[in-house]
Length: 428
Image (cartoon, rainbow, N blue to C red; front, side, top):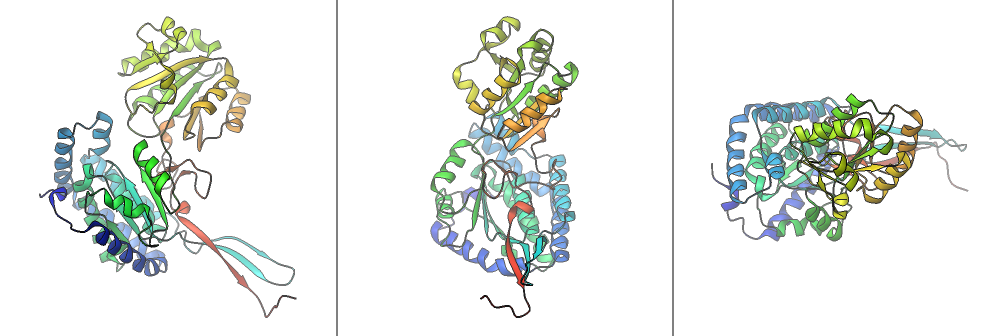
């Protein structure tokens, strides 16, 4: 298989302008497509992905070899790597999206006015969505399927590190579109690794792009948030916390802390800081840290954490605001729920936080006082995922407060309009 990065795609601004125009042209037929036709397209995509497993794995092998040559971090390599199981999971996520209720045309609210007017608020597609992402070739399928379900054309710009994998997956999505009689341009993949393509998308493709969703590291997301001329759904980084209250069950605290950190260290929902109630330190701290260390995690802590657990190394001030995306966790003791909340509100990226506790008052205060997109009680932060929320999948996690927050799924990819029905009323 050839490597896409080796091809000459010519004039990048002209290429991107054409992609934008074709996406806009696909918007109306997609917005008015029936739920049944979109369902058929999604089912066809899932089937094509499963049939395409050998080709996708071959393409991914090229990307993995390139990743080794480029000295990508272990976390980035984990995000990049596809296996047959991960590809089947990808196909199943597309099927799950297919089975979701179609949001387009849903009446969100309706009411009657004293003058007899009947008013409805109705879901509509957002428009053309641009998704800019690094590694994670599965985003190609997730984003394409979610945008299609919500009636939005999408322009996908994957990283050069995953371009071959993304292209193989994209071919399966187009196959599903064509088979269902929908425009092939409804899901487009930017074929060039030229970074100028990102700049063209941030500029809005001459008004043809309505919203951008970046998924990647701090530098990518920061650039998008700074330079984009269209709305952005994003989180800058996932500095996620687990707080173990004095009322926590020990076995549960151990299991949640290890899973939150070590299940997959390279995802945005991985825990980066562990806070332990000082009143529980004598019973809970060492067993939790021993379990983390046994799982291969490096522990960085305050002096009192180091005194209790000698393998720990000193945490610097920077550790409390670092997204490791690796098998490293920073640990400190806090004086109860109040100090835990203060630490989180000071250092968190407002992505995902978890409390392990049996005391209802502590849980209620945690939920009320912390302003993060996702809060969990007695559950791992790794559940911060649209698929785990029953959304089928997600296009990303948003930590802003306008329009979308938390997992961005099908409903979050819609806007709304008002339909007003009268019987000849005129305004006095």
